[in-house]
Length: 319
Figure 1 (spheres, rainbow, N blue to C red):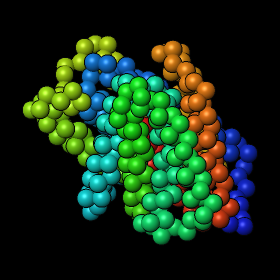
Figure 2 (cartoon, rainbow, N blue to C red; figure 1 turned 180 degrees about the horizontal axis):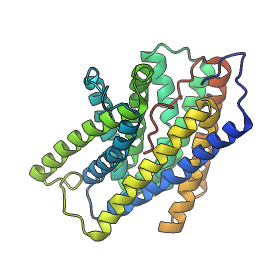
Figure 3 (cartoon, rainbow, N blue to C red; figure 1 turned 135 degrees about the horizontal axis):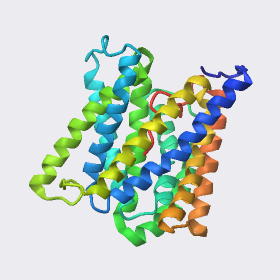
């Protein structure tokens, strides 16, 4: 479902409530993925955390493919496209988990939320979306807000503070490609194929890490505690993805999109409870600027775009 300029779709109250509830559960769960990732990354390299997440999410998606009858009709006609999606997704995950090793969860997630602004710009360039000067200005303001968070983090941890921006760029590319191919393929089939390619790319990175002994890539045998953390990453990622899929099936993406910014709030709460981390005043200012810029872009899209460039209803990805 979608809304267009000058018209709207009135949903039954029960359907609207269900969709919003599913999205709320998704954004509450999403930072727990990162909490488990940060805990696992204390002893497990980011590439191994990424591989575990791909494996577990693919295992969760497999029964859904079978139940929906997609296994028998699954083809590799667009395997190259899914390989590209998996490649940028793998890079985004490794970058984000590497960030979580040294940065606070809320800061990393807040910086990541420049992704809708990057998607807006990339869509105007490659998909020829019509973007006015107001949305370009909102993008610039949003990037300024990100810099307010990056600058003190850069002083603390160095260039790794820029990795959430790399993650945001990768996800923007991932979403843009997904939008192009999503109209003719099943969402669960797409996620499963991407997961398989992601496993392959992760294993290649782990093999490189074994040779180079890179701290980011070199695999280790997880102990019991680390294994439980990895299971937590996969389980919460799968649950969050399932909630997101149900939310987008019930309610238009443009209605749900503002709720995504609640993830920053829930990340702050969980980061404070688990790691005793809480953003200072400057970082809160940056967070508020990013949220405000993102919401303004969404508002402009709902008014003037036939299909918002920030529509990620086919992806259900959370960093």
